[in-house]
Image (cartoon, rainbow, N blue to C red):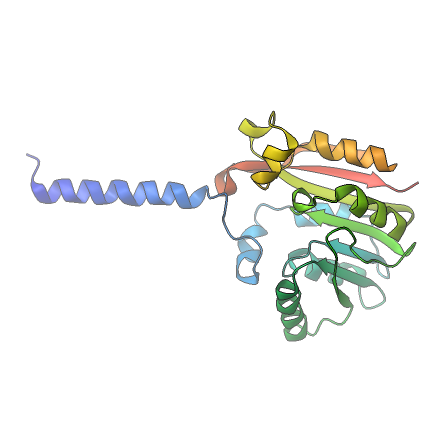
Length: 225
């Protein structure tokens, strides 16, 4: 016999399950602030991204689109006190939060830089590596940005790009993808080749975050010759 109380219990249980499913796959899920980093570590494969940069103690590297410093903090550990990390973002509020984290953790080998929308303002011919993680899709002036990054890299320096795209939107135009804060690997490959980078690795998919955000991330590693 189904009672009213039993029906309410079943309805409540269904709501909990449905809510859990929505929370598990959330395209707007916060992955940038410090309190989200531990969970992000479970799927981002940050160590592999860093490995692709070919860094060593004393290297100089830039995190372009650093947000609050998820990759910046990791890079600072890899390059050590003899190295340097240039943490670039166009939003001062994010750089302020990064600086607070750096101060709290007593990290001294990071230089925050307020970039421009068409120029990350990096030192010329001085970097061993640059990473742009989940930010390239926001760059309307992508050709200018890539030109500046190429100038900033030493010969043999590496650029690592990692972006997300949902399977059902891979065939959309670049404009439509970017409006959804995504980008297909084909567009980035065209950009890099046009600027004169040499592609040494591409992997699609690289990270499957379907359960977290409903998409998959690809990876490109490019070299300045």
